[in-house]
Length: 237
Image (tube, rainbow, N blue to C red; front, side, top):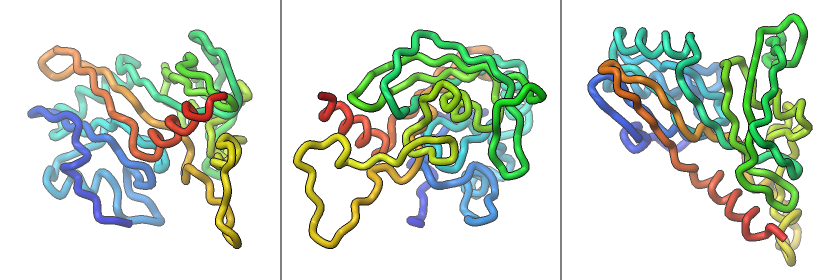
């Protein structure tokens, strides 16, 4: 993996917090496969740094990091009491018209590292709104009220709108040939998926700073997610 410049990821910073636009393919915390993770990178310059929440390894976007223990406690209480507003953007398979569609279904973590809807699970609520329909896909705003593992992914799969590329929960890999007219491969080559991960991005985060002022952070789309939405828009019809 190309060496990350942590400072290039920063989208917000004050005396208490730092927020980054996490790239895909890097774990938030220590990972068995790859020793590079966001927390270890942050602690190279801030020994007391603690991540305030977690994003899946393949998920990009806004990630909040506390610079000292008091800031971490302040943010953790807001996450615990559901006072942090989180907005994700996802490209889903299929065309869907969600208007503040609320899914309120409990989720349970399974032994294999996945999650599923189950009566005995913990309560989980997510609100979905269509931002842009395409020919075979939809850009969807996802607002998780609770913070269960794989919550957005599981709830979208239940709506029969799995995230593009999320093969673990029924999503299909996206190939440019499915939307681009006249697409031709070079001879003796096999088409690669256009996106090498699931199309999920943590777009915005709103919480209250230690001085009581609201902080609203936005993370621009990374190159791969932006390229996907551009291709879908260009080949909408």
